[in-house]
Amino acid sequence: MAAGRAGHLDSLAHDKLFAGQDMLRALQIDGDLVKLNIFEQENIIGDADQLRLDMQRMRAARVVFDIGYHCGFAMPESEGGGAWTPEKGYAFLAKPLMISEGQRRFAFPRYLGWPGQAPSYALGQRLWQETRAEAEVRAWLSREDEDGYQECPDEAMARFLDGLIYFKRGKDESRPAPPLELPVSNNQILKKLRVAFELRDEDLQAILHAADLQLSKSELGALFRKPGHSNYRPCGDQLLRNFLKGLSLRQG
Image (cartoon, rainbow, N blue to C red; front, side, top):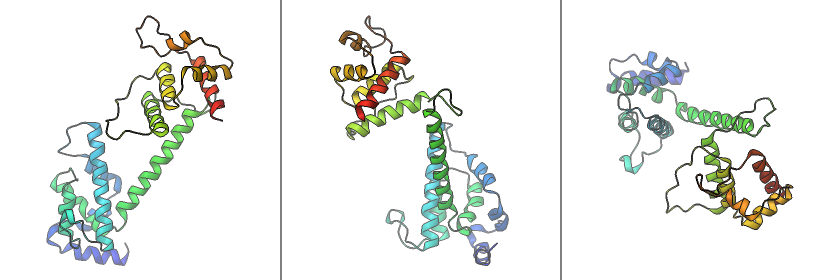
């Protein structure tokens, strides 16, 4: 342990906030074990999304405290302003740390004794998530006969298509995002691409013609009918492939 850190720990050991605690043991505990302790939360309802959001909120708060306390920045005015102190930091982190008082007292010395630990964790987490996402996308974009190929999950495809529409046509912030349409069918993909690229019937026919596929206007319209309609026609894989080929030629 570095001399500076040891000296800092010595001062913390006499702080009334940590009276009676084994400071060195708290600071030397493995990060994964601390993570397990944090996951043993008392106030979580059990919803997976809520748990993930609570953990993100907790990590963001740790970054704010770590940088503010160790760099000597002032606290946000919304939190009372003034210089960061261990007491103020503990009270600040008590809000997003959805853990018991005992777990909070056990984990808090790490944030005081390891400057930069919280931002480093946050940056490492982001890099890991980005690397994993890139690997997943590469697997989804691989050919079916290539090593590493993975089928794109419906949720990922649905979010991509909605994001493509926002990217191409903009997003109306005054309106809530529509719910995801799951499962995703070839007809839905065709429909979303039509919306994203603002394609008219003649555009669709020209795209298919470029891929050596001819469809009449009525045949084309049947692809955009709702399932259950008497004229509904499912879009086959080969038809969608030809459409994507023609669309890529059109986009250059």
